[in-house]
Amino acid sequence: MSSTIYAASTAPGRAAVAVVRISGPASRPAAEALAGALPPPRQAGVRTLRSPAGEPIDRGLVLWFEGPASYTGEDLVEFHVHGGPAVVAALLEALAAQGLRLAEPGEFTRRAFERGKLDLTQAEGVADLIEAETAAQRRQALDQLGGRMSQAQARWREDLIEAQAIFEAAVDFPDEEIPTDVLRRAEAPLRRLIAEVTAALDDVRRGERIREGWRVALVGAPNAGKSTLLNALAGREAAIVTATPGTTRDIIEVPLQLAGYKALVADTAGLRETQDEIEAEGVRRARVWAEGAALRLYLVDGSAAAGDFSNADLLQRGDLLVVTKADLPKGGADAAAEAQASARGLELVRLSAHRTDDVDGLIRRLADRAVADLAGSEPPAATRQRHRELLTEALERLESALANDLAPELAAEDVRLAGRALDRITGRIHPEDVLDRVFAAFCIGK
Image (tube, rainbow, N blue to C red):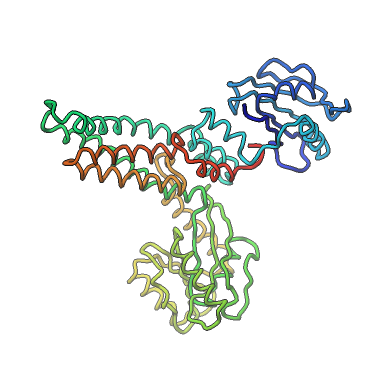
């Protein structure tokens, strides 16, 4: 029998209302010890809560959920009390005095998963919904919680079963009169699976970027105006700006909301050869961050006599080449930047970080790019690196099965392993260390 756990489900601090939950076999007697007779299941009742010594703690609402018709699938009780720290502390102390155990991070949701109330991707959707900062993150998390990956996997399972049955028939009954084209019959379900898993894998990067933030890197030579532009985009002094080259040594990230999507804009160390060990490490980190970004803005001081494009190998077609300090007289760097943009297939933007209209125009351009990159006809089914790794494994197995059509025993094993990889996404097969990693990211009380 599992232990009975308790925790505050609302954030610490002062609030109008705080919620404390208990879940497990001793939930009802523990709640009755505090509140007396409980209201009928799934109905709220006003009760005076008392400590083991009989001292009043608070007067609040009590809700009793009889398992399995509860969030965790166990008997569960919620106390809705006044949100003062002293009230919550006294209530938690009274529960601890009854021998109940403080819940670990994510333990309520983990119990829901273990009792079949949620699959693993839905549990991850709960965590994402709690962490959602933007409308796009909220929509994606709700879709995940609604079982989008589970629905996709149900479709895939039909084709997996069909393909595996065909291959195993050829292995188990080699002497029977099986049609000579039996192995070719597995090709259709395998190709459907490969197409769908490939589509999910192609879309997982979009899901990760919606969850974690669409990354924009400001790169370029020292004193190109990166820190000044970052401050203008942030609307505050996020980075130190001086005339001394190499002031920025580390990555400075600023979160923005672009058309309902979370974005992370990063000021990076000026790209140049240097003997300074600390600055050299900053340049290395800048290149790594820029290579992993969704979009790079390569800044060039348009008032300089010559532009520095020695690190333009970082750029990809469609990136922005930004000519800064457009409020100053043009130097030779301006014309050089225009030629570089044309040769490399880059969009050219001229601006001054001191002009509001210029900065607002850049923000609109970034928002358009974020929408083009992240919007889709429907939310992605896969949203995490864990999903991507397992989808990749499944795809490799399916492609191997298709190539092994003359060795049905090998093809059957490949299809079986592909199914295992897909099952691990939703948690039908779940190594304990995977569960520990997933639920450790939750807050206590959820």
